[in-house]
Length: 141
Image 1 (tube, rainbow, N blue to C red):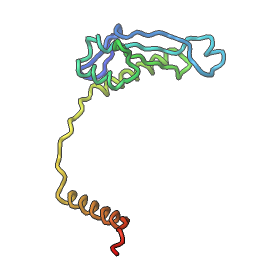
Image 2: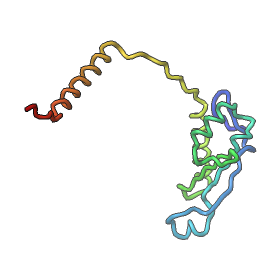
Image 3: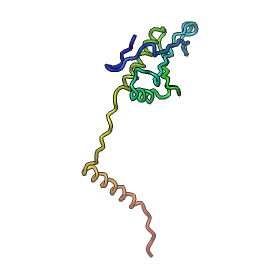
Image 4: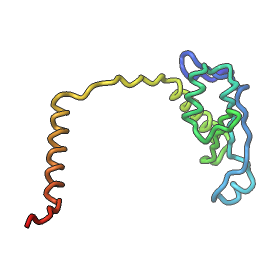
C-alpha cells in the first residue's frame, strides 16, 4: 500500500522498516514488559519514490537523524501502545517529507534605499562624534 505525501509523491510501505524496542523512562511494569517504542527506518538515498532534490532537502532537514548511509531513523515512544507510536512515527515522516517537498524561493537581491543609506551615515556620524569627545588631547604648552 502506498502512503500519499503530496500530489506527486507517494511512498510504498515496503520502503519503511519498523522495529519495536522497549521504551525508556518511567512507566512501571508496562515499560518493563512491553516493546512499545517504534524505530522507523526509511532509506532516503535509495528511495525510488523521492525526487533527487526532495531527498537532498530531506537529508538536510533531518540532520542527525540520518545515518552516514542515508537512512532516516525516527524514534517514537511517547504513547503506551505500539499502534499509536507507529502512527506518530509515520506522521512525523510524512511531515518531514512534505516540508522537504516545498521548493525554497531564492532570495531576490535588493539595494538599500537612499533614505536608509542617509540614516546609516547619520548614525555613524553621531557615533563618531561621541567617540571623538572621549579622545584625550595632549596639552599644547
